[in-house]
Amino acid sequence: MKKLNILFLFTILSCQDNYENCLDLEYGTEYIKIIGVSKFERNYFKYFCKTTEVFGIKIYATEGVKNEKLLHAASIMAEYLDNDEDGLVDNQKVLDKLINKKVWLLVIEEGLDFDDAARNPPVNYHHFQDLYNEEISLINGSPRFDATLEEVLHIITQHGYAEAYPDKFSESKDSEIANAMDIARGGYFKNVPDEYPSSAWYSYYDSTCDYACQITEYMYWVITSILGAQEYPGRLDEIKNEWRLNTKDKVENTDIATYELLTNSEYKFPTNLPNGKYRIP
Image 1 (cartoon, rainbow, N blue to C red):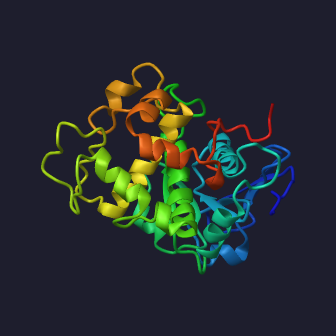
Image 2 (image 1 turned 120 degrees about the vertical axis):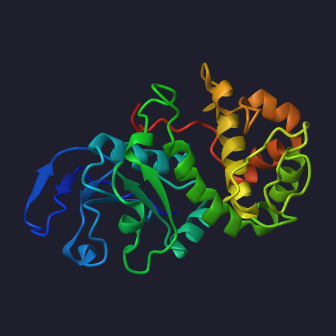
């Protein structure tokens, strides 16, 4: 299994044209390294200054992203993939798919043009997930839900589990997770309906989110609810129009097929909620 590279280094590179204008900092942990992008990368990725790699998965960030938040995002990625934090990825089959598809995480500061920032990705890197600096909460629920838990998980389920176990987790009709989602939505809807049945406990109304996207979001809701991310005070009121089963007990007792699928030890889904402190007691 692939081990996480261990270095203690944090380098920040200015986004100005003069590459030498950079500031070297000793920031990070023993297990996560974050460095300035190389001159070669800057030819393809001019908007991004900071980068790190977690089990072979690249993360890039713009200059204004706070250092502690970038480290947090990288740590969440590491904890999802190595949930027991023994330095080895838990599901090598899933990681292999992620690396083969060259997925990466884009961490961007608010106020920047997302389209401009994402237009020229690192050479040969195409599948990415965006995460905004302002969405990252170092403590989940204080002051807000930590969107890192969502966006990083999207990468892993969409490009990892869906590819590694297509019969189970493919984001297409008639996979096991798709059939379970159809039950959760009160029926099969190729397109987002004007209104979901009253029996639905998953009712995502974003019309730009197609059937595959609906599965991505569904996986996120179920997994994070099982792990306890959605049950802090006030959270249910924020999400109940989209998702009603915000605790492990609610999922286990209502969304029975999905609970059994996602807690099946064969697939090695995380069993502990990441907290952004990879291998830190």
